[in-house]
Amino acid sequence: MEMTTQTPFDTSLIPKQIVLPPVLPDVTPNGSQLFERSEPIQIRLSASDVSMAYPESAYQWLVNVLDGLIDFEKRHGHYGAVNLSEEEYQWLDDVLEELICSVGENENHPLVPLMELIVRLIDGYEDAHVPELREQFPELAENSSIETTSGRKQSNIDTSKLSEQELASHAFFCIGFLLYHGDQLEKAIFAYSKVIALQSDLWETFYNRAIARKYLNQYREAISDFNKAIMLNPNFADAYCDRGTVCFKLGQHNDAITNFNKAVELNPKFAEAYYNQGIIKFQAEEYTDAIADFNMAVELKPDFAEFYLSRGAAKGNSGESEDAIADFNKAITLAPNNAKAYYNRGCAENDLGDYQAAIADFDKAIELDPHHLGSYYNRGCTNGRLKNHNAAIADFDKAIKLKPDFVEAYNYRGNSKQELGQLDDALADYTEAIRLRSDYTEAYVNRGVAKVNLEQIDEARSDFQIALELAEQQENDNLKFFIEEWLQRLNVAGEETTLDNNEKSVVKQATPKQKNDKKPRRGGQWKGKVKIAEDFDELPESFMVFFRGEGE
Image 1 (cartoon, rainbow, N blue to C red):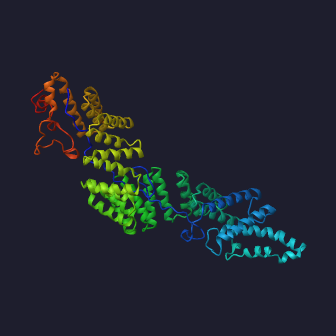
Image 2: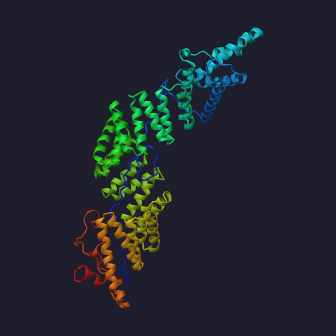
Image 3: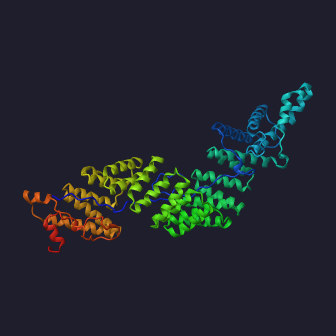
């Protein structure tokens, strides 16, 4: 028998996609990350005094110097007074010339320790060989090159206070420090390892190596280095905070909270530690406690947009959409080019039913970030809600192109296609969603509705039966009741005798829709969204008899 075309099943509300805005890029639509404040430290000076605007060639030169010093150590075994070959002396002299050009008169330059080490090695060679040359050739005493060499060795820092081993460790430390900033992380780790081999009591070295390892996803090795740094300096709050972020990445959330608590205990004004505590609580859906932590972070750093974004996300997930929008507005004021701020505000506006404003914000987020997956997806859902199905399909197309396994996008694209009567295409989308997620109950229901509209009744009944079993497993009572109604209709339809053509033509003619005062039977999230028996006035009288209780 034929049935009037029915609308696909919808989870009723625009899927909520308010997310915690990651400080580091995240390709997932609902990912969250802790605030990554890690920054390696320098022994001799603060990192803020150092300019890192070096060309790539400078970092490559530094890598060559590192490799050369390692080879030098292999040949001589130490950095004290050694018998350099003429080739080694010339190489060191060339390195020193480069260092002089880079360091100049800046006593706080991070390369000063390396320059001091090179000067000491050259001094040893010249003390051993240059006097002999002057005795044989007195005219060399007035040679400008010798005078230049002697003059350039002057330094305002008394290197005599450091042993050869200490001076070498400081040199390798500065190399590691700069290589880290040049994104030469593996070489930086190698340089720090050389420092530890020469001088194992510098907590700064373990801390810096831990940071480099963290960004190479060597989390367990990073934890080990943070442990050593904390053992050597138990009052360094940053080390606890950074160790907490690594615990978080390893899924050790309780340990992460313990570390953040310790960081706050050592530094009560540590805004990032409060923020990170809030992230952990947010993920545990402890939104009230998360908001309290974000409040502290905002109080300590009121001009940091990320803190408002996260607090707004927590408020949005707590149902406080208006307060969430206020936070997103503040974030946009502080960071007007932050796509995540517009995206999150659009989600909150969706919750309040302000769909046009939501679409405008999703548009802005996409303008700022053409690859913002969540904005395409949510804009598609909003367009579907507004019956702009062609626009919705275009948005879901883009979302699927960015994320080919985005199951929800296939399901909702199928809904819009089904609304436009593109039943075969809708069926293909639902099938792909099911292929990607075999327990996607809504996709089975929607495919069942599409098959009913295609008059594939037996196949539709099979999909509804699978959906019913899944709904029972998932304890989704509202969806379960909806599926049971569909199965009852199909079973009753199966018992009807075949209608003649005149009867069929009557079935195709839609009778007046239900009156506005008709009360839906659903409550909660399905209220007014899911079709029930009273909504299907187009069906044959035998259907209506059954649902009025006049049948079996």
